[in-house]
Length: 129
Image 1 (tube, rainbow, N blue to C red):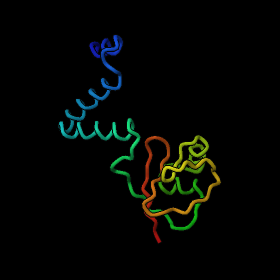
Image 2: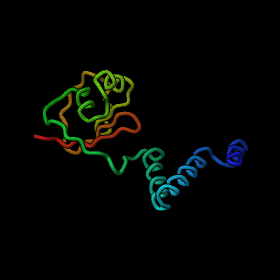
Image 3: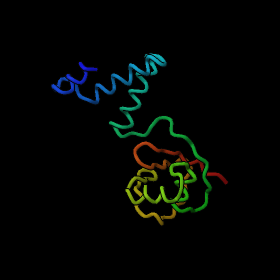
Image 4: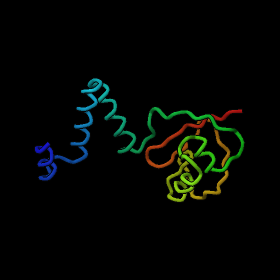
């Protein structure tokens, strides 16, 4: 650890590269090398290249028009409407890459649409009945 801190301090290693190396070593220790490489590549793809994760959970939602706050709660991306409202007002909510800034917005869910709350919370909408 001291060598890694020194390398970061003198600029010879980027903190992100050190963090990635430590994460890969830990995953390889607990799982295997292939899993470590896959996890590292997925992290880089989602957070560095800002692409969608490969394993977005599907969430069943009603087909009817609904308020964005209710949709966030129904999709499990917010624990309640207060948290959902905070996310919307903070500019953290997107539906199919379209930012939603109005907490009173009403949307009609489309099958396969991607609902995003923040940098790490995603849901693929599966419209039912």
